[in-house]
Image 1 (tube, rainbow, N blue to C red):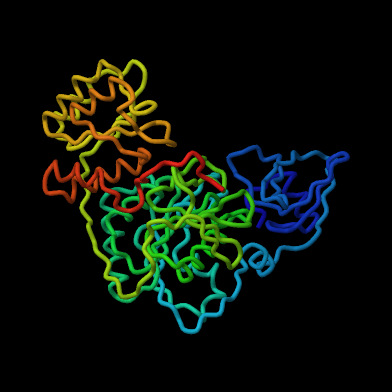
Image 2: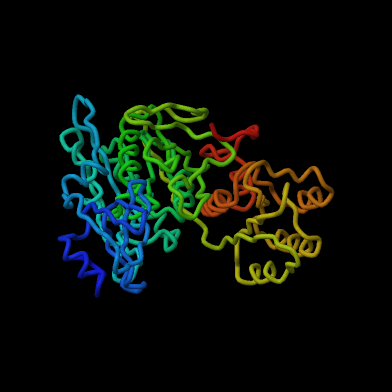
Length: 443
């Protein structure tokens, strides 16, 4: 259909019997390019041809009258599917009951080549088709829970998701996979780690940095490895599984409370913070790296649901020249907790110290994390830190700010009073706090 191509460029393509998806060669002076013809964005300059190279990246080649174009091979749906989405059979003695929950995000989206925007489009069934070679081995319950981008996720979505997972396990599911947008995947994985305890089987969040309709999409490998871990894992718990490199070679398994998106667009965007990854998955094999504190899988274990979260919690980032007005505003508006993202070991400007004390005196839970992400908050080192501790500010140990924020929401939602919330906040619930923080975090 030559979607997006007009004028002389379209005439050239039609003359050579070329359509979207065809493998073509373009000779521009002495340079030869070979790749798949891609649709182009209508809002951009019409005098360009878009090719997807074998390395997965797109380039634009400007039209010239002397441009030489050649059809190498016609597009075949079966060939593309085999190249990018092929999965392997595994021997499983009987059917395994799995649950697949869709919430939206890039993994369930495609590009609108008219505007160039990515928008929600696919459903859970489309994702399952990427794994259709497994159809004889699994009984998959498909649930279309939401269809939104992850920046629109709220506490209410966390609660609905946790409740759905709880019910799936109560009715015999042996593993849950959740398709989720990558931007706030770490928040949701932390929320589920606290809300769902004593899990009998794993809960896996999976996303993609490239939309499903792009041949360079990371969705297929992430889904494949999530499926492998869902039934092969020795351990229960909440995890995120995503690419570990820019290539389709292996993925890392991250604890739900330790995973953070560290790059805007790279396939390897997710890292485990202040801990090693749980495992690496390559082909059919799970290579365990750090399983300390994980619960072994046990089908007889009964999942427990602690599903309350306090919405009136604020993440306050410290910056030069900030003043205390925002803290007084939060107190007036009835906020219950403030998670400070301080500098270094857990520092704040002197000018906001009185406001912090006032917030604590008014009954707010105030905790200190660090903008550094890696390392541990330690307010005993400097005098100002000791003053904050004396006021009643509590440290977040080696939790990074996003996990600490979600935990504060959860503690205030489930504790009977502020003192109980403080005690709960300092307790290691789901691997979010280490006894000792390592200096090296990745293999």
